[in-house]
Length: 433
Image (cartoon, rainbow, N blue to C red; front, side, top):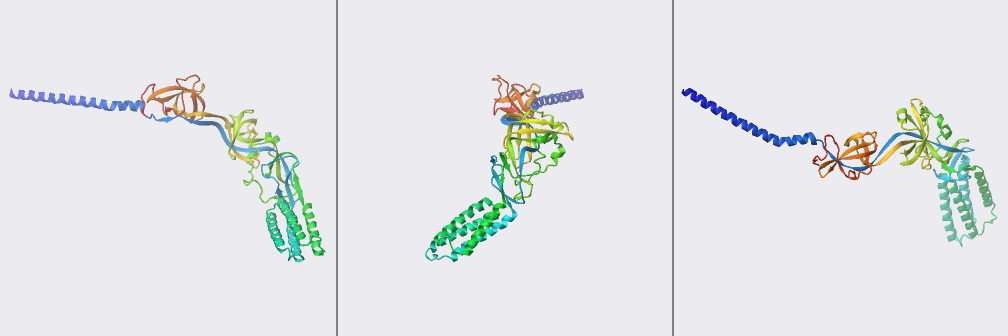
């Protein structure tokens, strides 16, 4: 009997322990739910809610490629071998019948040296034969200094092949010699040797003149001293005959703008006149890239080599497939002088461009590319506000958007905060930033 009572007592105690454990478990479960369910809810519905600010940007639908400049070019040739002296700078615009360069035979360089020696001899002889030198020594000394200065200058200019400058300085020396002769008793001296020197000087000058040829432009246009040998191959009339293989074999001209030693050869072009105001940029595109362009399309053209964009250029030619590619020709009418020395350039053929509110494409939801509409989740007072937007332009990563026409209450503005990843976000949802 006593044993039965003890068993009942132990069973009662065990039931009490189990009840207390059950209550403790229930209490701990409630604490867990209170603490972790909000975090779980936020993890499910608010995870990866990164935000950003809408900013201005630009998107282009374009193709980057190598382009080749084709112009209406008239070459200028030399009648003899020697050197040319430019009278105008690269890219300058000249009228018709204008002297653009002077060509000098090689023998004329030696004659210039002989002319300088004669000038020095004449000066020395005038000094020796002066009867009034003692009375006018100070004036004569000043003239001698100026003459020596001019002679050094003419030597430097001659070494630099600056024919026009040499002629000017030589005339100044002649004037100084005349002034000195006047001071010393007149140039009409009876000294036969001095007269002989003067006659020899005139004879050499005539030889120099006979070995010099002015190069005159027949047409108005832009002058370029960069001749690459493609002036006839790359002409506007030959565009439709071009192939990808022809373009790939074209080597660009020297980056320094032409031959710097100014050598010319008989019958070979050394300069050219670029006629008209228009030129063409041709490119060989892969067939897939060429699908975006059609004849008569109006596009923008960026020439990276000069950092310029030419708006509203026209696609004047699109070939059939040749060697797996298609030739595209684009007509431009600006920066002709800045590209005068260029042949092969890096270009962007810009099919379309849009500037406006720029956001990542992944930040849009319910995207309809057919209607070019979507929705964006803005953050207003820490609450999600889903706004409809119009897609003005896009690429694989970004879109240019604007508010729908007339939707003032649901407008989207610069510097609005938006959800980068809008998935699982609902209207009015609290968003902690």
